[in-house]
Image 1: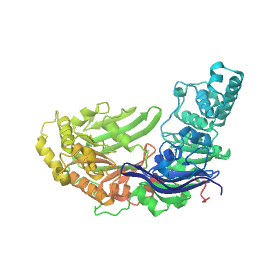
Image 2 (image 1 turned 90 degrees about the vertical axis):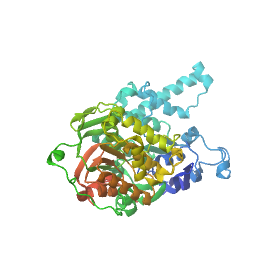
Image 3 (image 1 turned 45 degrees about the vertical axis):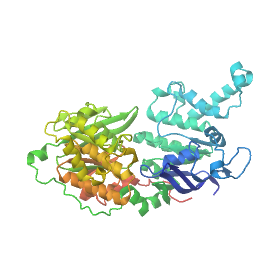
Image 4 (image 1 turned 60 degrees about the horizontal axis):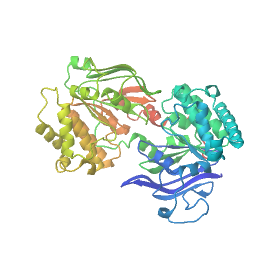
Length: 539
């Protein structure tokens, strides 16, 4: 196998956070090689190191035998990493590495044809003077560029849209324009960062055909993708990252059956928590009939991307209900929409029968919905106590019966004793676990009727994960209803009474959590299922 790209001990740290740790990859010519992993695994950081956007903290990257980190573009001089002149992004592009991004990066006011011509311009031979004077060589190259751009649009199946402004194209067609533009740089290696994000099944099928067609033209593919149907359906080999470390590599079936990969996506299942009953205790028939929260036929878009597709769910008073599923399934978007941070395109959201789907966030907070978002979102320059006080003063407005501020803060300290000693400390200086406790305490401080927790275990050490889930259980035992989004499926199912499993913006299965523990449908939602005819053999 001829190696196109190789990374050796590749590492990257941001401050004290290790985003990648000694990652070794070897990608063969003509392969479709995928990199997968949970949120925060380091996948996009890997792409940014390869393409020269960030310098690595350590390790080596070679492309076609050429050291991408060498000191000079002219001489193969070996020097310490810190003294090397880093290649610029356009130098990496001209070497033959192209990429697309998670979010569409087209020029919206340019046509599809003009966008692709921009990619081809990476290899332009015309000088600035010749361009300004519109010389014969400039006009000749312009004709050649336009002709090549039309060929690439034809290759991608969208030549008929050549004259359309890119902003007016359907989402799937915009993605194909991006691929065509990247191909315009004449790459040997094409990096695709979540190209199927937000696509419907028909668009995904077209994309998979296009990726295989690109590979057939002689271009090697390095793919990051959360849609496991796509990954398992077209990949020759797959590497799995977790917390910046490579934990597995192999064919689709080998990766799906790798215990370390299953643990990274679904959790280890080892905890002192006991599986919960599916019915809240001591609730009247009326309370069980009328849900605290009801979502009906919810559709949510980010521009042309449909992130949530007809989701319906119910949360009874006193329950813990979990939303689980792989990255990009729409879990966080549902919570943001309930709390008013994102407007729905269609559907209803009701709190005790009252429609709230069009209310702004401060109104939903005052109605009794607390939200601890993914990534914590604490105010890092304010002290821990100031974060709590600010949250209390906004959330307690128009809410009679809410305990006083000092009593509310004391309750947070009772749940999280470690926070009391750090009350005057800037919250940005807290550890990850302490910041997560603060985020939960801030959402909890004004006695919400519904507490929404988005990935409370993300980035935490295993011992701290257990502690966080014990606290979640305790909060619920004290009477707070909880809607939980959590990638650690095993822990989420242990602590919750019921769960909804999402895949690509849709609910694919719902049941009592005890029945979903070990259910193969859950594993398929996270890791997909290799399709018939998939490239299953290791290269």
